[in-house]
Every structure is written in structure tokens, then in C-alpha cells.
Length: 120
Image (tube, rainbow, N blue to C red; front, side, top):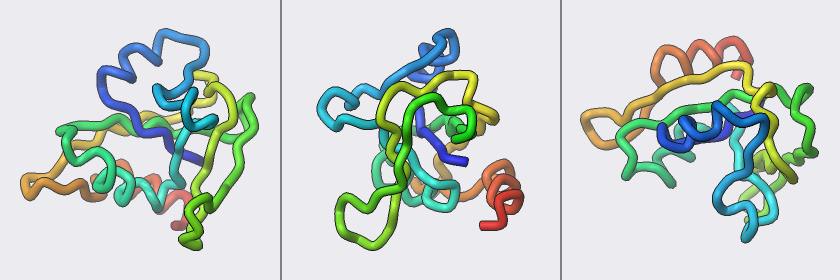
């Protein structure tokens, strides 16, 4: 499973489409995703200004576009990059997550359950 992190507004637009690309796809050439165990780090690094985010859990077996686990920054950690659009029917679970009172994201019950299911 890979996860695409969407704002609530972006999810409202995505859920009625057959497929979507991220806003930075044209400049990046791929859609940034994360593995379940990387999600909290991604939220706290890139989305601390958002009070709530939507985690779109994607089944790679249903995903029509190619995706690659890559370490493009040379950090030793690979992230999934989708080279094309994400078909909405590949989204198998949706998790809403809110920022904590201390201004950081942390694992809520749904994300913890997901990580436990994936043995991460």
C-alpha cells in the first residue's frame, strides 16, 4: 500500500473523477506518495500549516500507472513516486487525520491500525 496525502479541498475534487494528478506533477514529473510508515514524517514536514489532511490509501496492484520506490535525495530512504495519473478506483481506504493540539501530526487510531495490518 502507498499513500497520497490530500487536503480536504483536493479530496473533494478528486473523489468525483476517474483519475487525478497532483498540482506539482507538471514540474516534478511524478506524484509524490509515501509508504504508511513515512506518513507522519511527511505530514509534519510538508503540511503543518493544514489543520486536517486526508490520507488516500492506494493498492499498487490496482494502480494503472507505474510507480517506483526511489531515493532521489540520497538519504537512504525510498519513497513511492507514481509516474502518471492515479486512478480513483485504486484508493482502497481513506483516513482523515487532524493536527494535534501541540501543532504536530501523530498516529491516530486508523493510521495505527493500518500500520499494524501492514506489520510496519
